[in-house]
Image (cartoon, rainbow over all chains, first blue to last red; front, top):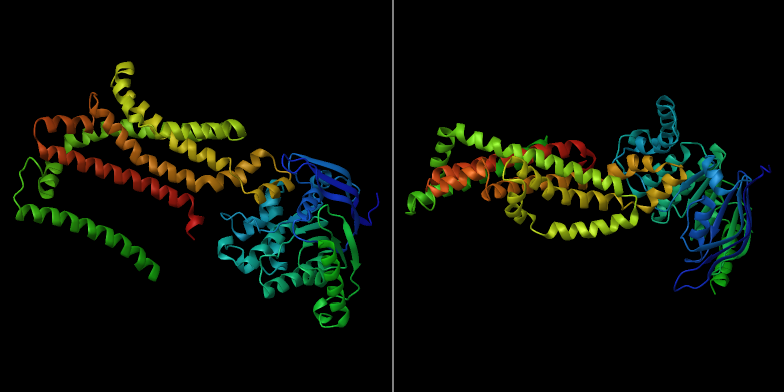
Length: 262
Length: 253
């Protein structure tokens, strides 16, 4: 098994066969890969099929009338198998916390479902709360937390069962600039310290450049990989944020995105 | 501390407004001359409640034996029925529609017919009460269970949880507040149903009692009966409310 590649997508095609949308080609010949321990972002115009791609990589069911060609492999396995193998951690656009559970109980949820022993669950949760500085909030309910904090808890929940790969679908889209930047730094720390592989879907160019080693630009429907940009900047990125290279990347991706939207 | 005062204030306001209501009633009857066949003073009613406590409580208990089992059976069946079919999507949606329709029919009119079929004993009232309390809880439970947040569903699927786990960890806790609300609403429905059914005939109960005393123009006992129903109703309702608050504490905080 080729372990250097976390995700490989090969000649991937998706067609919707709706009543009104006859044979709508959503994704066309998409190919890319994500190296193990890397941070890759996918950016594209809205409605370009990012979410469909995200669902398929996550092994989630898609709309019934969906024709799929090509293949997606996660550590050499099908997404569904990888998901069963607990290789995937999902962080969605909305925090989707269970409002009747406290922060600690929310983080514990996947562990309960996966059948971890109670003692082990407690240990993992305590450790995670500690390392994410969430301990003071462990007994709070989601409704008592800000949007940023809620999303942080949802990241904690995804980390609980220690998946190798984190799949994030515009997780900070609803946050203001300051909180978004704070969460960006947090996620970089998590990526580095816990040695994760991250695939990050976003529509924010700044965020993509700030976070990733590689940015994949998708085009409008039918979506293809328009360009791939390697971001050759050191971490932590807040130190290189002012340099011309950083802006050059942003400009470059913006141009690609403009071209890809036409 | 402030919260304690606030909470205290709330009960204080409701108690004082109740006292004010009865005082106004009492005083206005002192000032205006109203025939005793129309309205009597609350003090007299209270007096009757005490002097005739034995018979009143006996009749109330008789009715309670129709109300409580009926209410329990109706709600339990409503909940269980919804639980057993919520996963059959198409049937569930149709059943909700049909039930909403049935629920809008004043089923209490069945009391007139049911008497001829099953008799007018306590069991007839239990049957009616459970029939009428069944639908609200069935409809609420079914629509709550068939309505899951897509994000939660995706998330649980990504943990490979079974349907049973989804039910236990997400659907039931999520639905609990609404279900308990419906259970609470059916308290009033149950009392109303049993007593109205008694008006159509029966062998005992506070409804029959009120009806017969009305025939005798004994307005004191009629009113005392109404007071007993009100007392029973508030006790029943507050018990369920207390239970609800205990069970869904997370919603308030």
